Amino acid sequence: MKEPVWNEWRRPGPTPAQQRRDIGIAVIVLLCAVEVTTLVNSMGAYVFKDPPGLAEQLAWVLALSVPLVVRRRYPLAVMLVVSALFIAAQVNKAGDTLVPSAILFLAIYTAGAWEQNRVVSRWSRIGVIVAMFLWLGFSLVRALLGPKGEFENAAGPLDPVLASVLYGLEFNIFFFLLAYVVGEMAWSGARRRAQLEFQAEELRLSQEQNTRGAIAAERMRIARDLHDVVAHHVSVMGIQAGAARRVLDSDPVMARDALQTVEQTARTAINELRGLLGVLRADAESDLRAAPGLDDLPELFDNARAAGLEVSHGVYGSPRDVPSAVALSAYRVVQEALTNVVKHSSARHVDVRMRFLDTALEVEVTDDGQGTSSAGGGFGLVGMRERVAVHGGSLEAGPRRGAGYLVRASLPTEEKA
Image (tube, rainbow, N blue to C red; front, side):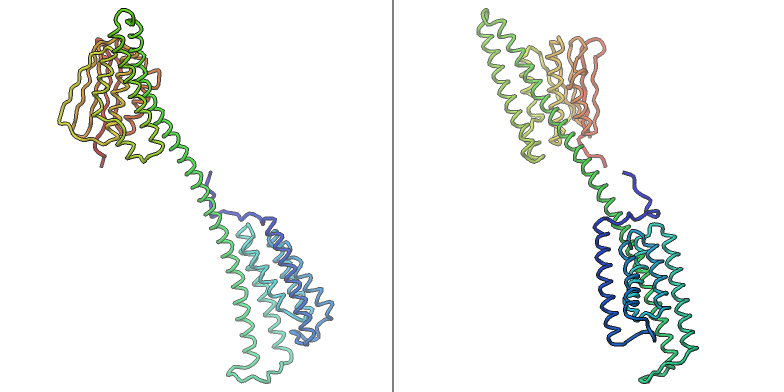
């Protein structure tokens, strides 16, 4: 989603609901105009002397009210038409100016709030206001040159005619300035709402993307754990079951031992699978505490030995507690490496070394096999790289010079500053 250039933003046209409201507003304004005009004529309280008949006055307020039906669709045209009709009504000495003034105010406001071309909106409103003041000036001059009205209750320090002129000027300045400013505020408010809606939509899309990424990452993590648990134990069970089948008739004792190893391995696999499924139900920290770690490595070595491998294990440096996530990843790397040796190598000896460095835990697994592994074409090596990458570590895996295969993982144990 590309962010609009807000300085060049154009307000969208009115919705169908807003257009229906404009019709309702026009009807209400017309009814008010008819009522006020009727009352003014009934009281004889005319603004101008010698007004036209009631029917003609009602025709003027009808003509002023009808354009409001499309005021938001054609704001500029409505303002110009209403302005011209307002002056024409005063030239013809319409009996009332209250409702026509309100209609003019609404038209100027709408041009400021809804006209898409802001330059046209600004200068057209200024032009209409200037024209209105010219008409006002013409009316005041005509009033000053004509016969003076009667000010029976005048008691202030100023000349009644001068006070009347000043009052008219100040009222009209306030009237037109308010119509202009309120229209600008309405347009600015619409632009701010559009910005907020755009930002809200961007935030929603970003949250959806983050959610999809988190779900994908969690699925990959669960897939790695399932692969590590299932592949290792099933490989050991397969080898032991095959050995039991071959010696079942000739050496029942060895077959029984092999089948016992299969049983124990199956139970271990089930327990680990249950712990893995708990990831979906428990908090992350409790999952890490329940997950296997460095203390569980001897069980892996026993399973490898049961599969016919000679396993040697060495610890270098000063052993210390490491983060649970790092311990789990180290365990899984050793587990996957041993699984690959059992499945894909003809090795007889495996050497597992654990090095506690100043800021990292290094795990190294080497064997004396053929120096090849099919893990690179499956999920095992990929899973190891992903696990190590989560901690910002490094993984080296490949044939050794001469013979055998090497897997070395370096896992940082301290957060970077």
